[in-house]
Image (cartoon, rainbow, N blue to C red; front, side):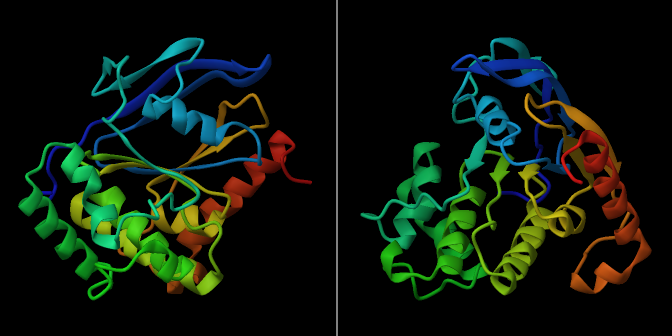
Length: 257
């Protein structure tokens, strides 16, 4: 992936969806500019994961539209890379084969896809594990593999659904740094769903807040902190101010007592 190659904008206009008669999305609007990193927070069950599935083209909304580079996009499958909450690695494939599968599906020649996968695994601290199978890896290593696969997924638009939510605090902090470094290098258009407010502020340019189901964006908080960011920035007022605003917005929606 060339550095700062063109990335697309992602926009949702008036997305409305009901599943099994239950409203999940209610006229939801959002926009993520090319190469921007946006985090989405909100109460559990409000429809955030469903929104990612709609943006990725796995589910079609009842009303509204998804636009890529300001153009309506009905067929979105394969145009955005979705990283789910679980690593979703294929257990019958080696680490190398898991990482290069997106490149191969995108039409990259096998030798080029293999070389790119090896370079990426080296960047993610996974050299020497290319021939291992997922069952032989720790949870943190599996998430590294999943993130490497996302990076080589053949698109410049990433939808990340709580990718570190099941990890311990130290591993989560480590992988946040890996993600931040990867995004800074390649600048994909990124939407991260997370329940971790520290994670949202440390990674994002802006944080969007969803209210209770059915989901709609009820708040937008810019993050003015310089990059690169680290855990040392937790004491910076530029960190604490947007975090406090996110909490206040969540309380105003009734998501927090």
